[in-house]
Length: 67
Image (tube, rainbow, N blue to C red; front, side):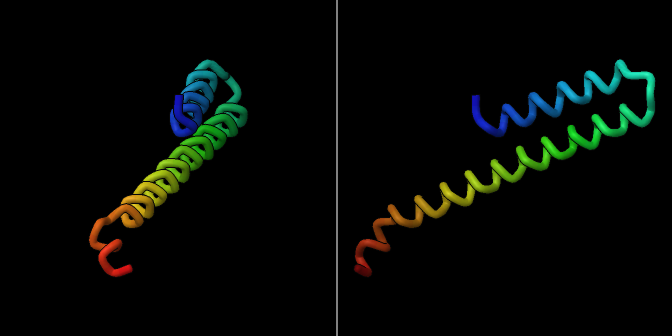
């Protein structure tokens, strides 16, 4: 399981738990936490995509010709 998937699962768990709560304040807090987990998942995905793009550039054969 990827780090991104772990954050998604944690967010989903928060949402499911919030659905069962009666207290609106507690529900709101859990939904805030879920949003934070989703933000972390997005950050991880962007970091991974950026890293993959950088590695692809390093392996670009045209770049080797310039060296």
